[in-house]
Amino acid sequence: MNLDQFIEYFADLLDETDSENITATTQFKDLEEWSSLVALSVIAMVDEEYDVEFRGDDIRNSNTVEDLYNVVKKKVG
Image (tube, rainbow, N blue to C red; front, side, top):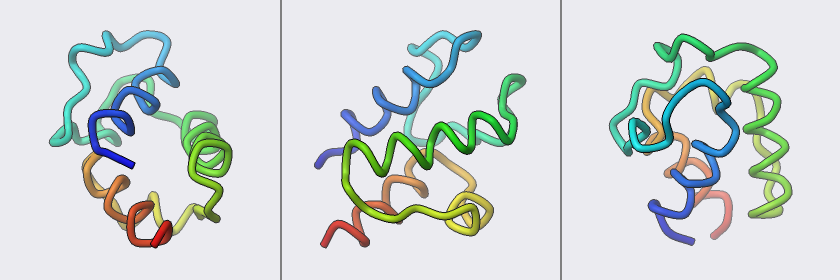
């Protein structure tokens, strides 16, 4: 598991945002297309790619893409 791969997976969930604009420090909640549907997609992606339970609270308590990654990394092991 690495941060660059996680950013790529995250960016793939976004239709309107150029993936080159997504970095570890991206404040994902400030993205114009951020919505509850995208949040659900993030939860599904984490479950599929990393096989860990990721919850809405994990998203609410995170601000950057790297924050999300760190939560997932901690749960992976």
